[in-house]
Image 1: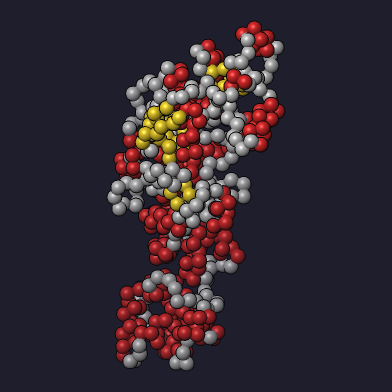
Image 2 (image 1 turned 180 degrees about the vertical axis):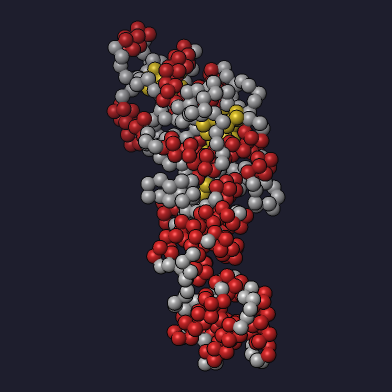
Length: 507
């Protein structure tokens, strides 16, 4: 085996890539890049019954969107291909035969009906049926058959599977980078099926053979594969191959902390669990998340950098990532934290990038009800200025319209609670007296208008509350938004005065 770090992400194309799978890919990518190694994508499609059209393309598109592309894989053939298991199926029989010849595996002819009957018989006696050392000599396999009988049945092409011969009365000493030393009593293990008579290997055999031939140095995979570690380690020993180092990642748990995160949790909680949309499920991309935010929050779902740092660019993650700091226990998924990350990355985006994402949304909204100035929808400078004023209150670009509507359209309704609280008997008189002051202003920039209005409030002996809240209400339609005089300077002198008059007529 090469000394070079080579890791693989090996999903099955049975549907979309869950974010748990994306995190597995991410950890593999970070580990590879940190060690100047290779990140390989292998498509494990031996189960043709569950194959879903379009799933492989989805996996590749998702990795590319996240910014963690593979170095080797389908379409990037670099000497260890093919990278789809279905295209490698002629390889595996040779290795199954090798195990039989060396006595590490055997043929089993048991029918599904006979195994089911054994299972039911054990259940009726309160036991669990395991196909292994304690009963394999009584079952229908090459261990219990005479050699000539075995040859006859093979020549007749009877259905068989190849099972691994698990040793009796041994203790396996296994090592996991994350979980440390693990001891397994071989007496509790079953003789797993490695190869089927249809010429297709099971996951276990194909996985080991492919990892060996692709010179994989580290197998970083989900916790659900931990029960397979004993068999996989024994298979390496059976072939006389050096085993890679294993690291089993913790599960991503439901927001309430109990049970593995599922598609149903996303539907119930209104948050994505796939990187890209699939069918009727919205992906992180389509929900408005930045790939950097998704990578950042996924990296910290099960790994702790050992510091208080929460924001990591990809190159920082590559430097900081350490498999020994990956947690053993499951990581609770927090939808609010994912939004917090997206908020941070949105603030860091260039306003021009945000402008390009916001413009289609804006065009659609203004198509239904035009702006007070028809040029505003196409005025990039104006839109970029609006974005710079409102983006700190947003976590997603699709929230911009709700936060900025009054920059484009004259409010024609007013927040009822705000009106009750702020619209006093004296308000119309105060605002009427403010209009000539605004009309007389030669310079309608934010600092100038602010100074004029605040001086006037002082001269008239008014409180700021009597003027500023009602003024915001008539300009915005609510008591929200950025600095009031910035808004007035943006919509302009004529529009600001028009809004005060409209509110006076309506309220």
